[in-house]
Length: 430
Image (tube, rainbow, N blue to C red; front, side):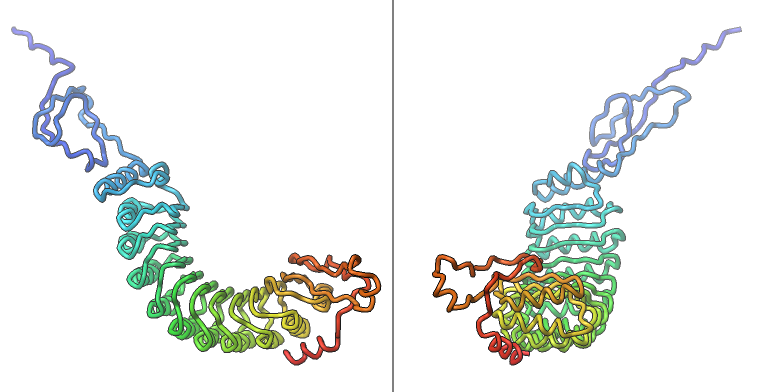
């Protein structure tokens, strides 16, 4: 009887395989043998009888995102950002001032689709324009982790304003948005007014250094009436003046959620600050108000009288307005006389003050913590004594004060010239 030969433990079998282009491979199949790309040639694959499965090695998330990003950069002919290539998966992604442009933003949008841990994205100063932002909106609209995004200084314009508003409307998880320095015009305030009305999840909105004007005061003021969740609104470096500023503050008057409001560098003027006073008389949620550089004069500090009905404002900034030492003293007198006032910090910038102002600061500090920023102290020596002692003994020059003024003691023998006249001036201002 013929013997049946025993089967060999190793043999070669023919496997049909078509290999994809390398750029499309996200999962690599490791086999022994040779293959030619893009062909249907047969590949000889040796394998053990008990190993019928082909081993696959899955790429990790970083490698996938890196490969996708570099592929898109090659397709769009832009230079990849090394910081992102080295570490594409971070909870806080800071890519400020890389000059990526619209195509760079489009390339970045592709790997961000796979991101499930990004909480803060900073793309300030990249000139992505409305085209680049449009790609990012499609990617980030469904991101459930992103909470903070900065798109400052990106030349978004009016078209970009609509895209930014769309992003905030679609993504219900974004709470902080920085859109400063994007050339938004007055007509764009309509889109942002809609955001304030509808997006209850947005806690911080920065629209500084744009070209918002008369329409913005009306649109944003009306929107604030129906919003009770926005906590920080920055409108500094715009053109919200006089009647427009008054309309904005009429919305603040009815608002019950805003904590910080910055309208510095707007030129609010007397009409605007009157609106601010009316708002402070009724609003009991605002904690910080910045009215720096708004062309306010000594007569405009009358708005501080409304603090007698306010028990929430803690920080008041009035730096670099047109105040004199008389206006500064009138402001502090109004704060001191308001029993319910809880203001803890006042900033009047480089405005000069007199010794009466310093004495009043000390009186307030005896009752509660109080901090003041101001300019030099104006001191006038007794002219009779000055003529006897001569100019060589003149020690009336006062140094600039720091935030805390309670350490400064008035110079011995120094008197305030015409104290009654000063008191009359303060009374006339208040």
